[in-house]
Length: 223
Image (cartoon, rainbow, N blue to C red):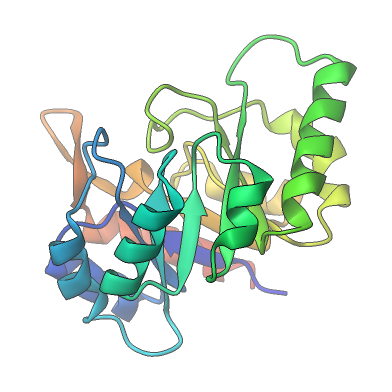
């Protein structure tokens, strides 16, 4: 199965159009107001209307109530919901769209066996009611930090996911080939790794079309 790609944190029409033409399988819109990539439901609706059939649109929420998730998802018309906070399984079961639940993993330190077992159990619980789990770095920003987690945990966790997982957290053109070669993820999710740089700093929510194209080409070369 080929590795599919989601470009997340989109805020501009030109970036949406380019990502679709370049071959992205899914596009993500962030509805977490504390995020520098936040986009209002009104703007997200306009962006989603630019997306053709068969390309998924994903709404990202952090610790939102069911009513808010449902209302925004319905208004924008996203096909999937991605949860990045501490949402319980009971909430996931009530959402009528396919749900991807983020599991936040440590970016440093030694991960003990007990912790691995905790993450495995947590993931299994969510997979009983979600379409996939998304493995991301545990940061205060709830995603889009550009930081990687300790990839070695994947050796033990991935075999338990039955292909229903997404790799995220600090992905970019400098590491994606190595990660696909080692772990063969069915899906990858990139945000800050394809953002425009000015004076050496990323511009959150503003995508670099060359980076998007290069990233997608690298992933496609393994398919």
